[in-house]
Length: 145
Image (cartoon, rainbow, N blue to C red; front, side):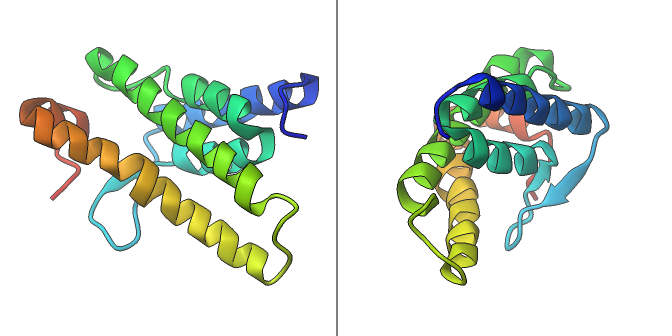
């Protein structure tokens, strides 16, 4: 199920395109427990990466990140989403898929989503913040209060 076959490639492209449409539509949410705004593409990246695996996650992350309001940051945004999607796909395959049954499956999903944000996604912001604060301000666009 986790290799890139025709079905997984098709699903990865669909999830990536849906995420791209939502970012173009300017739909945002707040990460629970923080004041960080994220776009709705994260939902499709998380679910799509779990369904299609690490390779599908890379495809979803790349397609979902083609557009960014600041064109100079497109490479950064693509790499950030591809990295998080790849790691999420690996973790789902290794720790959740066919290893956890209900009701622990729900807890595993919640843990996986928390890992995506707090271990794979937010640390990249922190690294950029400590390396180059002006780039950090450009990337976040004032979304972090």
